[in-house]
Image (cartoon, rainbow over all chains, first blue to last red; front, top):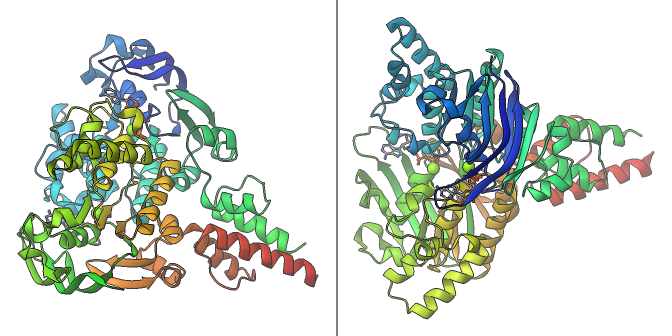
Length: 270
Length: 287
Ligand SMILES: Nc1ncnc2c1ncn2[C@@H]1O[C@H](COP(=O)(O)OP(=O)(O)OP(=O)(O)O)[C@@H](O)[C@H]1O
Ligand SMILES: Nc1ncnc2c1ncn2[C@@H]1O[C@H](COP(=O)(O)OP(=O)(O)OP(=O)(O)O)[C@@H](O)[C@H]1O
Ligand SMILES: [Mg+2]
Ligand SMILES: [Mg+2]
């Protein structure tokens, strides 16, 4: 299995803009982690280095015993799959099924293996019902699931989802939560970037906060969402129910509706 | 208030489709109001926007039944003038970027240039809007060398700068951090205070509850609710129809279910805090 380690990693874009400044990060094999933080903090840049799309200008990105420096992007992307922030950067085929089949096909698997991966990926993302559709006739939010299916079908040990919650409705968020749970059960390492504080508070054990090219803090949702200083630095907010509780003077680390109900009811009965 | 846009028995089919994306729509949009458009993925929100702006059927083709009137005139009878009346922010910011400009500053100025606005005025307006949307620091960057959220801010800025009377804005905060999201709502509110008509599609229902005047709820191509936001967003039964409701409304409903005394279902954070605080106080006095 592959632990993911970033050691003193920096990245400058061609032209010289420094986007990530000397960060250290460790994600254990099988962990389910969220990355949150300010626009432009360097989240996308960081995860693109994990999948070999970008190479650190300083430091090392280690995936298990692979140093991404010594491998091609194609090699790294067989271990770490990346779902782009903008689905339209990723979609090149005229049907959903051919889009999802492309990755496994390139791997030259046995036909049964190829088929079963495609079917499984279509099924867990709910995209099986659109298999013959042109992805561009689907709403953007659904197109995102097409790209998620395409990456799942690659069956990599590590999967990275860049802003999958953007533009999703309730149902979409539920489906995402299910997908994360399934992948976690399969022992995959999953890294999700999101700006949806409710979603993050409900679906992850570990949260990495980034701001201004750096990591601000790593912790559990309960720690992060009551660390006002870290939240401020990263332009984040508490989940709504935490905000309500805080305004009521209930500071018991509330991060979800159930917590809030318990705390409020316990005060009613005193 | 004056009606600026009206939909009369509107049904619309994308090319080669058998099911309409919007069906039997009747609606009046009043001048100077802020409408929040909500509903499930695929419900027809973007199609609705495209209809108001005339992109459907103008650009997408397909078949339109009924009429969409902007200031009394059918959208299909307008030429280019609609682009001056209605500002339109696309759902995917990546498609809004013109691709012909090398810097963010020029990108934001592009529309004004096309409208033949004098250079000094362009500069003044662009600088002001870049401040407002917090993208000043990006002025010299290439519009394609931006993070997702930065690009979304640029897309919004490049439309706001045109100061159209009507703004149709399709999910402008989907890529934004929470602070940036709230600031966009504050900007839109400020535009409304300047008498602009706003049609905003959003999944961030808690902020719609806070800022919009009226809510339009779409489900499977149909407008199923429209009107006062408090009434609609406190209707818990909508959850079962896939419509998301504010977190505080869900909290309120669940508290009530457990016997906690609340006068009604709150829809904004302030209301929730006030109502819960009152109830807790009364509880103490009774005891
Ligand atoms: N191709 C590029 N060339 C130069 N600078 C870039 C390029 N891509 C991104 N940047 C800059 O690098 C910084 C980090 O961008 P990145 O996309 O990693 O941010 P992010 O944390 O993912 O933000 P968001 O939440 O908005 O997606 C930003 O300031 C951005 O302007
Ligand atoms: N260009 C197109 N061609 C064919 N069908 C389309 C096209 N664009 C949208 N549709 C279909 O029309 C319906 C309404 O889509 P629309 O994009 O308006 O939904 P939406 O409410 O904006 O969804 P979302 O929240 O995902 O943005 C969907 O069933 C969609 O698949
Ligand atoms: Mg990003
Ligand atoms: Mg849409």
